[in-house]
Length: 182
Image 1: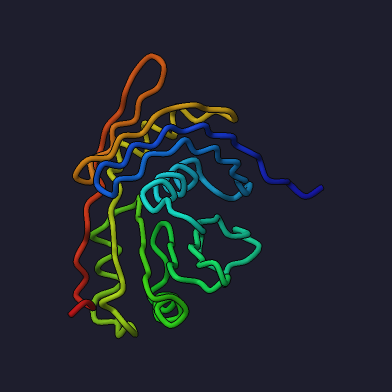
Image 2: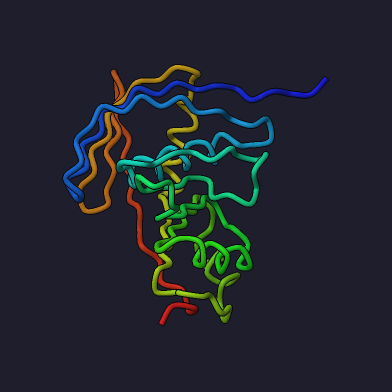
């Protein structure tokens, strides 16, 4: 019998002072059986940091040719390609050809990811943005993961403050510089 996706429901009050985005976001996120808690949390964090009109999660593992998260304009054209983790360096040129902007949010060792990208020619590399999510933040959120979860997220200078009913966790998202960038 094949395993099915697990659905997580998040009710999030987002206050992103960096981008002047203040929204109540209700997310219904499917987690594939092969997806780790940390990957799911990183997807949600990236979604919130990129939150804008036209943002959507992809079909997931079943559509590996798509980004983990996409932003589309009103015509349906892909404007922003967002990947999570440490995508293969050969995937990024395809992303850069398909979208004006490409962002990667890694929740793993950023130095290893940068070494993987070193020396690779990436089309439109100036459109590539690489970010490292604080690994302790990801672990703390993964430890609190429930099928239904409500919290608030405040963002200031790429520092995230995530508040639950009884406590708060915090961590930074840092922009990385790749040697493949100009």
